[in-house]
Length: 127
Image (tube, rainbow, N blue to C red; front, side, top):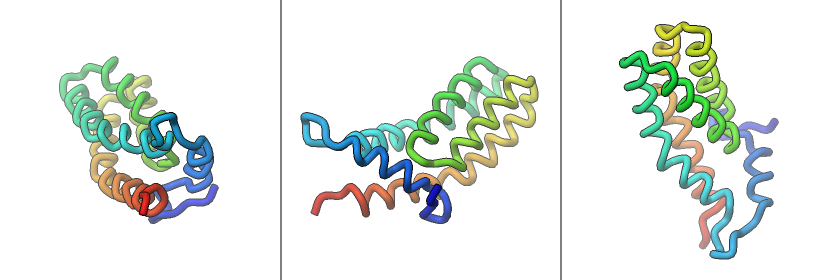
């Protein structure tokens, strides 16, 4: 696994996704996937924080699971694993630990977003 952007992105995974090519509308699968992720992640983190405060374990677990899958799909390995940890802590009933892990994740999220946005600008922008 080749990591870049401060060891935040799995470039091999991103290259696999780039090879999926263009859709009929001329947009790349990867560009669309990154766009959807960037549009959703802040709201997902906020929803997880709200669920943790409300002790809504089902919502916290399902949102963490969905966000982890999206992050791992896009090569955000560290973020994806952190989200999996939140999910696993909820499943084990360790809601306090899950909340702390979520707070840590929220602090590092901007660097992950910046790395993904930088990749998108460098690799997917059309001249």
